[in-house]
Amino acid sequence: MFEKIAVILGLGSFSQISNLFYGFAKGISINLGNNKLSAWTVLLLIIISIVNILLMFYFGNKLNLFKFKRAIFTKKNIAYVLMGIITIIIINIGGTFLLNLNGINNTANDETIYQIFYGENPILIILFLAILAPITEEIVFRGGIVG
Image (spheres, rainbow, N blue to C red):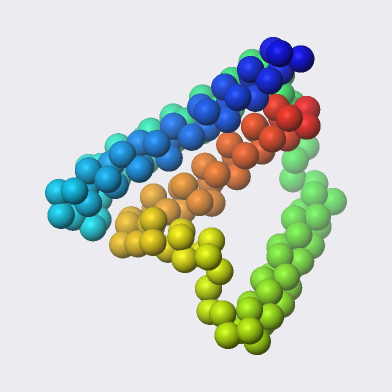
């Protein structure tokens, strides 16, 4: 039991390395009077994030937290993905409608993400929010906690 908790805490901490570097770089940039990160800093953060993802896969595989199935692109899986996307779009539209009825334009979470990544390189934003976050979350929670 102690070993499983240590693995979960270790993977959880390790999954935040890219965020730590981003926060550090963004803080330095703001202190220097720049609202945007330099191109070199963005490139370095992209490399760090890709290495972080690869290492998360490596450690998750070494710890037997998940198994890859070769037949991933089956008609059934594609149908599940499409149904999931359609469901998410419907929920998003409904949620936005309900928020607008109450006079709210953005959620606090959306506003925070907007402030954190304001003016940054779109590639970096996509990497952090659409690739790094879901992958590390799946490895830590589904692999480490749920197992």
